[in-house]
Image 1 (tube, rainbow, N blue to C red):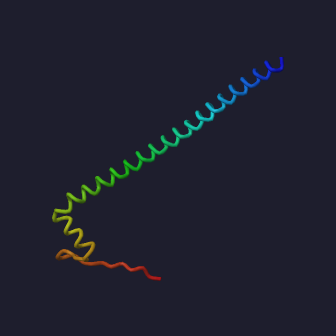
Image 2 (tube, one colour; image 1 turned 120 degrees about the horizontal axis):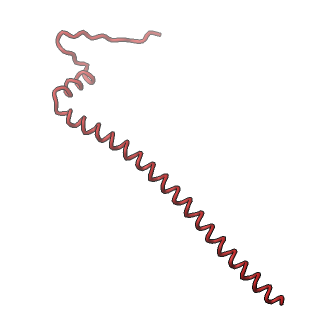
Image 3 (cartoon, rainbow, N blue to C red; image 1 turned 60 degrees about the horizontal axis):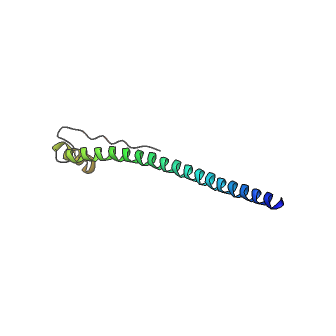
Length: 94
């Protein structure tokens, strides 16, 4: 009788152990899936930001060949002005 009880107890223990392994693996997979989904969302956000940046760069590239671009750069970088314009420098005083 005791041998039968030991076998039943051993079978139950094995079944519980197998079930616990399945539950552990299921939880581990769910955590992994959640992390991957978060990575996908982050990657999509980065992609959108890069698309916007790319659009701006393409617009700048198209603009780079125009006279307006050269004029703008001359004003910004070299401090050039058009005929008849006055230069106003503002300085902060302490």
